[in-house]
Image (cartoon, rainbow over all chains, first blue to last red):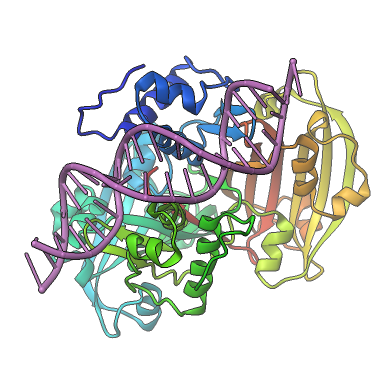
Length: 243
Length: 243
DNA sequence: CAGTGGTCTAGACCACGCG
DNA sequence: GCGTGGTCTAGACCACTGA
């Protein structure tokens, strides 16, 4: 393990990456005691505070844990990479080893309803993109998705945007990263129309998911209502204790 | 706003608490520009690094956001306090303004099945507590819950534990905080037995939730399988982008 | 240009765990 | 008593923003 002090990449970041790699490789085993912060500092010829910045971030991300007076240890992170954390449908399916796809069912510009403008915190009336897509996994319908995006958060959209990463476009357009989303999940039974689009029996279990996604300043930029088929989809996520 | 340098409470923590209060009160409005880190440091007569520790934590928790070269701002956290973050059924219901309750349906010590010992990462064979409860909200059945807890993570349990906070007991018994949980959610249709216990029609929508909860060192200490009635329960959560 | 956050230094004292 | 992480200091240079 070594660092490059001349590199433009911050030192604490170099340390984080190397430790993460060693943990995933198994070079650093669960419950292993790491060298102390002072040892790392001396070994790399850097300040202890810089070492702490690296280790603290890894503690926050769940790779390490600390015990006062004892030391810093490696967590058993049996649970596979929490690479979740606000993913798009595309990313979600890829992480499940499936080929994501999409079929545009409807696109138009609409005036926000009162409900939508309240959820999105945009003016009323406001113009929204309305995008309805059938989402595919390995070419089989997995979900129906209706997205509403304020025009002033995305600008003009065309079919090319619906294929590529919408989230990257949004981040670039607003010059601000996406920070978090609120989701509501509810079980239901497929309506005639949903059953038709999803290729399942009417009345079969479906999972309704409503999502509102926010930029770093707390502004909402999309609201999505979707229906996932229950026979093929399980929603998986991780939660942290307190804050 | 002021701090007490003599207090045993860390300075960065005092600053965090006061800023959070001001944000919740509305004294600090959304998008407001905070004083710079150097101003705070001078005002309080402390080091800039200490101010940074306070502000960085608040950024991680979503109260503030920073922009290079511009300053630190208050987030619009319209979405009510993400006081979720790994809650027990009891905490969950209280936050929804409902009176939580519980009816013990079954309790025994069992030998771990292969599936459970693999999920829990405990030896095989191992002794587990098996606890089945009907969970009530305002005295109406809301969910059926089957918990499996390794004996060596909880010691002996009796009915008093089933009433009070199990999580506090676990944290004390293991001398280590709970850190996170993995959950899997799936829609379904109520079986005859589930319908009976929940007081709904067979075939009505239910939400199946499987949870595995971990201590800070990454050890699993409980696995819970539950079935929530779909007509009264919506699962709400927040997700952060990347890591 | 001056001001901001991002990174980093080389120290310091404390409370805690353990032998 | 000694080593650990937790907190804190008083500086420093950088890249970035905006006037």
